[in-house]
Length: 401
View 1: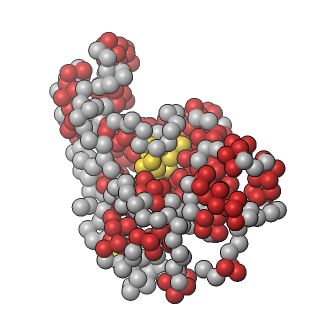
View 2: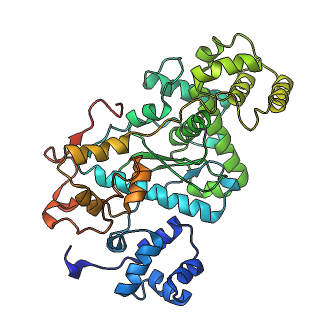
View 3: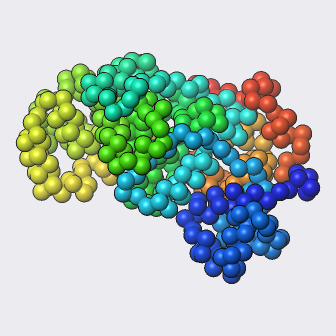
């Protein structure tokens, strides 16, 4: 990049600070600078000097050229945070920045990699407040039919979502109250889901993914302001929860395999359906197979067995991993003519963050220098228009493999 074009972007500094969960005072202390100096940088009233810029990059674990990249805008559609009501504002801001980074990486990669087409229908009504349980059940069945999943268990929930064009990522949230977040990006018209990688069991992670899928198909056009109203937020969460249950355990297919409504029967079904025993109890209650009182007794017995904290097979079942972003990066490195240094220069994020968000093995990128020269103008995004066949590498066979 021409040095004359290097313009410090104050919004990038704010974004990085939020991504690291730092207050302005804490970052200023780490830099041994005054909070007022940092405030001037963030307001765009003054740009940091060379030494201060290097210190910022080190403190925030981002490459220096990150501060000169154009801020990425994914649009104002609502971000649905699972368990948002119990999370701190700082935690939400941090996770939202990591979601934005995932969207930014994906958007950049799509200049060279052809991701699966988006096939996520809008199944929500005009007003979510009027949505009935039967309509949510129908929506889950409709999506299963559209994606040709039948009535059997879903072997890999994340693979199903990725093959439908949903970009899924994982990272450490460091916020026990938040399990996942979803958003329709207006930058590329693609849905995104970011899941927590903090001590999540396989069945819980699958349910979190299905829950976010529920938001994507039911609540695409919900006004973001609604999330600030406690009762309406709880209703949105309840609907996404019901959708997840119906999508993972379709009424006819699941009921046909429930020989009896006992804990031991649910335990036997757990590995096949990839759902927790607790989720199966709720599902049976929703379907009218058991009463509220029967469900209460099952939960009480489950708790007495110690299953409220950890159920049987939680240590054995493998947590599903996203593969779409990982394959995209590997394709560029193996077939796209990119070196690691060139890829890092284009993505303008710290190697460790790219590895985490894309599900890459630790060290694949971070074993290389984080600070690299930017690519020449001839290979920049501006000269690689999206959709040009000579530049785009298709991901053959969807996200599988």
